[in-house]
Image (tube, rainbow, N blue to C red; front, side, top):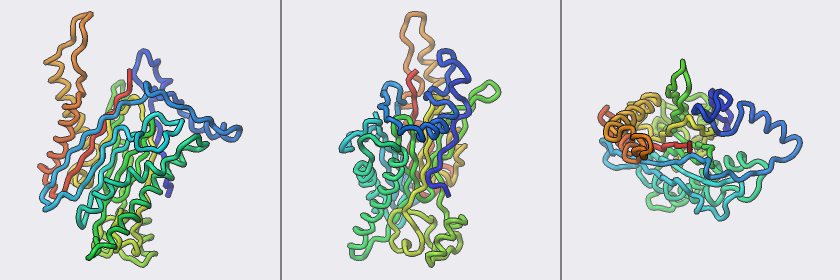
Length: 360
């Protein structure tokens, strides 16, 4: 299993059309950039360059939570469009750092709340500083270490209680470093990206999965659990726990349940519209593609209504407000969570919608 797997590069590259005439991938990277970097690394170590913030995408995060039919809301979430202020020293090669996370608790809300309050702080302490020859590797290592430390800290606190806490939580975190997103996840909460790709002369939405589900019925997960002396019955660890990786769940750690996240890296492009981070409550009643299309439909309706209220101005006049305004994006997020409950999801539902807007 490739723990540090990258997502595929976009099929539409900058060379497909001049930037002044057609919207495309303007991230300054040709399709063989990775190969070029590998070749150049043999000659001389790369020199980190500070990215100009004027070329970075604007990220806006919106969250919506629904309790469903549960007695208690056990989800938690974090929206940090700019977490640079938490770092002791900002790396010279990094201009902006953003963090978005959703945590789906089980057995109680204490593990999810602890993770929401502490994981990003632990990550900030471990984030690489100064000039580094391989910043990507160090960023990924800092994410893995932050998950491990957060898990250990919670288990220590949980075991000191009388009676001991038995809470656990999934975690899906998106760390955006300039225009690159790193997603680290445990359990069955998910992250997806909406990217517009050119097909038959028209731009159509493509849904990219940014996370990997950890289910005990999966071969590699089941083998690890069985090697540790655990078992999988009725699709659950020891017939009880529904996920094979989590924060907390101290009573299952000896059975092969681990807190090592899967990591994926994706370069954001001008064709990207938004990310969705959500707990499994959403994806029990929505496929990833359906969730993306639902948000797009809501935004299109808002855009059409906005055009009626603010028609194209006469020459020389200022244009009306942007169609994807904050209220429209927040409304799409709220409607998506509400629709999950309407479709019959009895679980807690938490949705984070992160809009991605590059400067023109």
